[in-house]
Length: 331
Picture: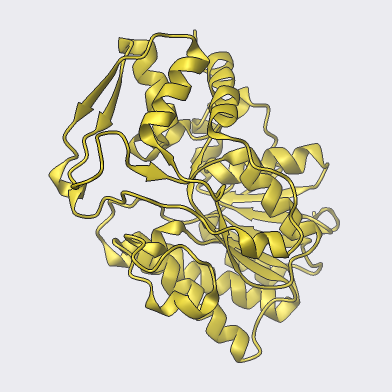
């Protein structure tokens, strides 16, 4: 077993949305994987089997620390995508354990053993965006996340930067502020799945899409805007960061172009070649005061690192995603 771990990529959150698509990339590159998550996810989330994903060796997330301490050969890198990403979770202890302390453990191992380390931050750290969406690190401490999830991600970003100042950092490390990621592999996310996924399901079942009304003056219903980024683009950026490698830093990962929910719904109808039928419903009061009306990643920092490929447009990404859903989800 030990010899097989040489050059193995450790991937946490492997049975999650972005993690599973990283596993697909690793399969194509013939990179051996140690996939870490709750073990039952690997078998209960049957859509991964339909995608043909091979997770390699799987390990329960609670056993990773002891496994790391017993390794005699260094892994190729650690891609830490595992976290509690439920923005509705209200128990601070959950985020403390899964999003902060677990991440600190992995960072410390990567620093001590000189292993490249990539991790998932989040655009949720930007809150309402009152300070803009620049990923310059001098601004991180001033950001005001709207929920505990965003706060947990910001707290780790700040901790990582502090550790670097103390000389305790991996040889190459990067944190990634994911914006609104959509695409194959998110079926298990329920209410937390992308609007594209929900729109496809609604159109297939009822022929229409429900979008939230605007509760802000000057913004029409459906004109709330987000930076929607296709998961294939996310994976390609992370692969670039790993292979270049990017030496250090915290980066935005979006397209750099905000699009409206109305644009998204129309792209889904177009991909399905179905007449548009959209109903606007009130935003639930439980999330209304924490609802983001605009996000748009400033992508200059990544471009300065030399990343040149263009991102999928919303229409291109939705079209690819709908084709995938029609293949893997329809009867």
